[in-house]
Image (cartoon, rainbow, N blue to C red; front, top):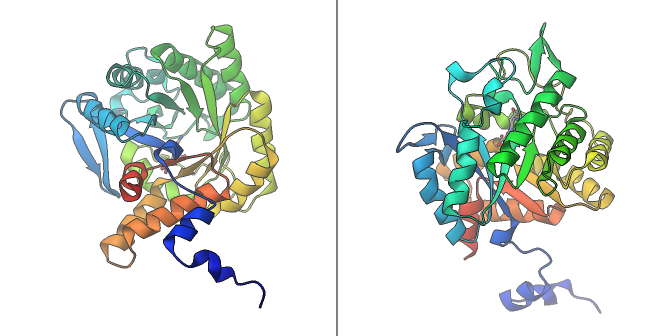
Length: 322
Ligand code: PBG
């Protein structure tokens, strides 16, 4: 035998020398769930260890993230039922929860990169990502509202807007309006290849945003499709996306690699709520080694081609690796 692969695995020193993928705090976007109220820190039932925060307590959380080297957040708001309607009108309120949350984060951590979720579902009385008429989701009526929503977030101070709705043409509409209004430096992270996944369940609990009828299969992608993901992503880049995203993570790492090879913009991956819940549940039962599995999954996502990972494990991962 002239070649023995085990030589490069002999001990941790040589393993760390030849390691191809490493994880650091720079890899993460931290999703944050925000609610109205004071002194609220509520655990999400299907996401043990993950919380919704009112704005006052959000401040401490953001400071803690910043001190851990986590420099980007992805904001989501839980909207009270009485403020929901078909057109998601509350999403455009300059004094709405999202708009106040952006200012709160900037106040406590001026350099924290703020990305905001742009989609109607938390604001929609139907729990859909678009305007509903006769049981159908209207595309173009929705994109017009999404562009206004993105503009409202930009005005409040968002660095990036992150449309997660999967309507056609929304990146073009958003980019055009941001340019027209002078927000040339507000970026767009597009959820480009977002699949109609059953792994979003716990997130919909977190925001009380489950669809009231039907499902999201007329706008989110069919998990059976691969080439379509490349088409979707290339179109979003043409329309002006700065960062593209694949979502969910683990079941879609083939797509991540395809897209990584096909594009020249950064690729984000969202390790979603159901992926978080699965690991927590198995670890709670003592069936999996929590920290080891978390690190393995995050590493696999990065190895597949992710430039950044939106993950509910961001804080825990930073603790594990430090
Ligand atoms: C909705 C949205 C969803 C997620 C992010 N934005 C859920 C959905 O499409 O129903 C899911 C995130 C997660 O599961 O962690 N616009």
